[in-house]
Length: 295
Length: 237
Image (cartoon, rainbow over the protein chains, first blue to last red):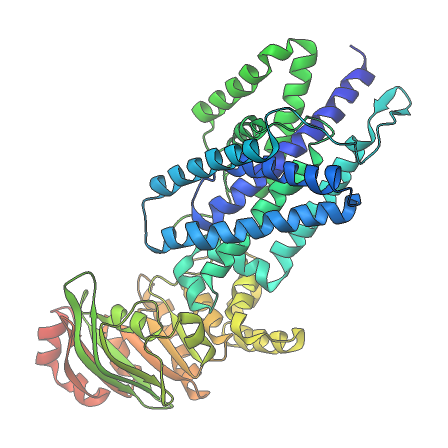
């Protein structure tokens, strides 16, 4: 294998890994804010992809407004889910395991809703980033690879700025750490948790849109992506944002290289084998979440 | 300033507070004493809206606040420094202070003015402003918790066991600062298990035992009543 091919594989793996990193980030956001694991994250991604299919592929609305409509619709859904389901359950101190089963139910519900509305046939729409292969030196690149990396870099920088530097962002992190104290600061915890869900489902929608040039849409596509995203979260460190990003990218690159040099059929076994090793020998992941539980 | 009338609070079925009456006059330091489990923290939580009163009225500056949400109560100028300090461990000192002014919507200039006031009160916090709060010592965290509460410019500052788990030297500093905050015009309601400390700096004191006020009066008078204090607060006082 030449260096050029390896570099090519790393780039393709990076694009795939970023797709995993986004739902992984969503999972970590929700985990931090509410201590819950959201099993529906992958199916929310699927739903985002299909909404884009209708808005962009069928209604022919231009890409940027279609993208915004999709993300906004999914954000609203996340807000509603939080207000109708998650916050009331948290407020009534329902056992987290029971709330978790509810997210599995959402996952099944969304998957079947997609199936009923859009059918089972795998679907695609015109690649919005163009399908003209670009050649840079010895590298052959699809334009969407560059676009995915660029869009996600901008998105993550904005998210980072929001969480670090704005009052609302700091309040979101405060609620994730100490809910009694955040109430005493005058923060509405219910609204902050709803905002976290809104952000998390919007991010899922972004990955649902960005994945379309790589994979055809099927109602069950979110399932495998969610499992990879969870592997990314656990490898990176549950609750850590940089861990979610690096875990996602690592999973994407590792599986792409493995598929190319060993056998694509064993790709998932390889990734989950690594996950098992992590759970056995480094259960906190690469980056343990920086928030300590109690002083 | 703060008036609590016939406050009863019950967790599940058993009542924790039985018609507690308590008054905090403007400009004073009022101590609320009592042994572990007497209901001191519960009283504060009911005032700041963290828990619901079963019956009774709580008034703040003439306004009925029982039944209001915590954020509404903070906006009225009532700050609560909770037991165990509860600083945000993963936020820096600066971010902890900034979030203390959440309800005030300060401009960047106003934010700086208020933060400088807190730094003047606790110079240690200025030295540590970029450090994560969770990595600081107990005394520094207590200073931060008080500073964070002061960022909302409260009319009434309620402190729940600020001396808990701190070294004697640090406790002295904290008590001095509470007196200083009061001299600058903030009314204080101080909960303490350590009666001696609290009586030394407060004007009035209430003693709570098993959910009822059993003794109240000027702190000097209460301090003289050694036998009663011992009976309600335990032998160590």
